[in-house]
Amino acid sequence: MKEYKTITEISGPLVFAEVDEPIGYDEIVEIETPNGDTKRGQVLESSEGIVSIQVFEGTEGIDRNSSVRFLGETMKMPVTEDLLGRVLDGSGNPIDGGPEIVPDERRDIVGAAINPYAREYPEEFIQTGVSAIDGMNTLVRGQKLPIFSASGLPHNDLALQIARQATVPEEDEEGDDDEGSEFAVIFGAMGITQEEANEFMDDFERTGALERSVVFMNLADDPAVERTVTPRMALTTAEYLAFDKGYHVLVILTDMTNYCEALREIGAAREEVPGRRGYPGYMYTDLAQLYERAGRIEGREGSVTQIPILTMPGDDDTHPIPDLTGYITEGQIMMDRDLNSQGIEPPTNVLPSLSRLMDDGIGEGLTRADHGDVSDQMYAAYAEGEDLRDLVNIVGREALSERDNKFLDFADRFEEELVQQGFDTNRDIDETLELGWDLLSMLPKEELNRVDEELIEEHYREDEPAGTEEVAAD
Image 1 (cartoon, rainbow, N blue to C red):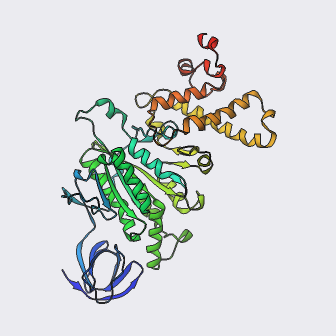
Image 2: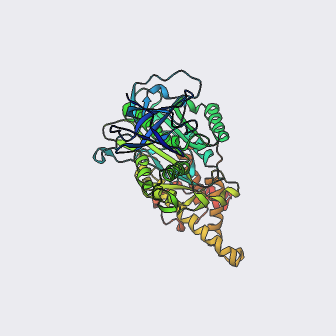
Image 3: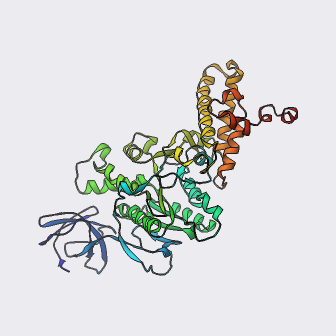
């Protein structure tokens, strides 16, 4: 292994060195500073005679007298089932005071793309216990469904709630036999504050969710370069648990905005030509490399499902980060400032939210036969109630017909009873759908034009609107 003392320039997180042999892209580098510290880095660019290296621990202390060693291999993640229950930093080193990790093998963190022909279509329901998601925008095994939030909204609380509550319903029915594959959560945090990290860890430990989780923590004061590695470490671990060990893995990545900021910072240091709003032109490709690592493979038991969380800068959903994410993923869950200011938890606005794979993951044998109809009808009624709110602001409530008033009441109760559930309540899909019928029963039967007649006969509650005993007995 050759050692060079040929550093020519240091710019931000980058170090440039002269070499006299070909060096591979993405190769791992060790840089030893004059005072004996060793820092790790990765080759970003390799051309005739000069390489640029991004340094994970920051370039402090590195000068022209530092020596550079090229290790001849790319970044690897040590993977083993024993990672469950562990907390690692953004580069995959344990920070929980536990024993060293003895890996079964070391996997390249870039991962291999899933052959489209070998992909299995995602169509099995994952229950998050959150009504606005399970009932209205169902998550399916192998899907990538981002949460679009904004600064100051409680997306972290929702992420923790999903990490704590998410289950694959059929596993519950099978009991503790060894046949069913197990459920695991990989939590990758990028650029979060120490305070947020403490909240996450307290919650994981308090609720026991840590036992089935692997946590990767990259803090705001950690180098930006490490942020680009963290999600790849997390996804490599997820793929190993899913496709080698048969787990159903839910990967929660927060906050993708910090990840993209790190890409922009490195791009600026490399003096690349910036793309839209200063982000690198290849950001779409880069995000796709991460998001497309979700899915199911034919003949393999496990699955990787992703919930990336991103805060939209300036609450702008046309910003490049949510915009590109929306192109690649299968829908989005939108968090809403108005609902949050009304104290609704979680403040999920179901109207602009969407799960593109929902129709394949619900219905008889998956959730319940009435799920699709109930969801469609609630959507339509809530959208109409929302439109009527605008009208009420102009003409006042007295000017509306009795029918319109019912839809207005429906919209209010939909937010207060179905969306509002707090961050500690875990509702199974039956509870969510029964709540849905309670709400739909406020409306006259003839208004339920998206629900099958037989389902109305079976589930409609006659006594709901009248609230009198005689009607119920009838």
